[in-house]
Length: 119
Image (cartoon, rainbow, N blue to C red):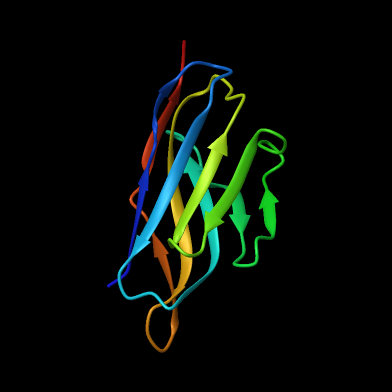
């Protein structure tokens, strides 16, 4: 069984930074795309950033230039460095991964970590 576990969320002041981690564990042969999503109360889930196994990245326009997605393939871990955070209350950030854990690729989601940007 594959699990994705996020960490690194918390309370941060506007303009501050946080680094989220997404650690995959279990029977993993390979991870293709890893992605970060966020969802604020009362709002739809939003794709924040994606990164492929070779390291190609894409970002939502709202975070370009402020967030950096990365991964350590040897550790099966993804990261989201968030800088210049804007005030906006709370949002749950969760990671997603396309994982080859056996004979087939399957999609997995973490349970999320809460980020609060407030003074």
